[in-house]
Image (cartoon, rainbow, N blue to C red):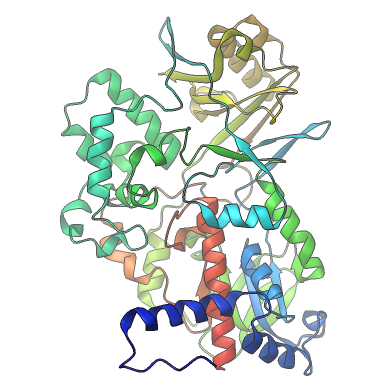
Length: 495
């Protein structure tokens, strides 16, 4: 039997015992939690049909909390339900069906070094991975000019400047940037403020602007410098690991598209998942039983995991009102950073035969970045792109024509004959996707950081924005799911 740690127990041993307990609590077959929850499940109203009878569930998960739901299920909890407002699972991941078994991702799609939580999940779900294609030259378009250059799996970032950012990020903890020893100095600045002091050449500044649009969803002037450094801190304090392709956060893709992870988890949940079930009001969160008003009726639960975007939380009604610190964070969270992602499909990746990698950067044009998004074996050719909404028509045929002409200029006339075209505008897709990324502005973390994670009564905050590492990425979403499930299981155990 393990000994209970005492104040005299060496610190390292106590830490190991604590970590061992925390890991065991979340694992499948965790005896104490599993037994307690199983006993609760055998009591009145603790069956899969509890919500249909108006009984009280142990846990309700609001939003895209499939990882948390999976952990609850594996820990032996039977008394829970997931309420998804959309008519599908996946949140900010979505696959375009290209036919013949091929897909192209319309949302988040990559993982990289250090993103072990999502990589482990993929292995458990038997989802394979493969490297993003970058072999060959990238084409850069500007005005009437066209240049081919082999960037060796990077975006051509200035290495000296990247090294400065990497060093500064060491003082900004990714999980709590507001606790940085330099918070007063750094949180006053936008990333644009810092870049303006670096004597960057105008032609290089265009590249930095494009990089920020892709990574952060906004121009550098609107991105808080403290938050940007916290993102680099997640990437092992290496800017190039955050903002490259080779050996970076954009380095690896999932076989079958990123949404396949959520689809597989949803299949395991069965009728514990309810689609098209938005929650409108959360009442009595400070009491023993929380009441949720949904489009499918009232549901009651002892604990609630809020796995939705902070700005979307602000659109729910809370009775009583949330503590002012948490409510202020939700009001101030950036709620709109639109992103439009396109997929042009060809019969084969013809650009590879020319020594090109399919990557296109257009200075001053509608294509922020285009890249080879073909399936693992290159059976068909797919060029995905992030485009500027204001410069590309919302008419699909016209958008296809304009982008095909740009690709023809960059990759060759074969680009004028696509097989099909898909796109997804996340700003217009549905009312549940307010933004794809969170461009945190200057001053935000100094003011609101402390309110990000602490539970409010029986409400536990989850979602990628709350992750200790890789917040805003798929890996952050998985990590936050594990954490919130563990919090709730331990809260139920104590109760």
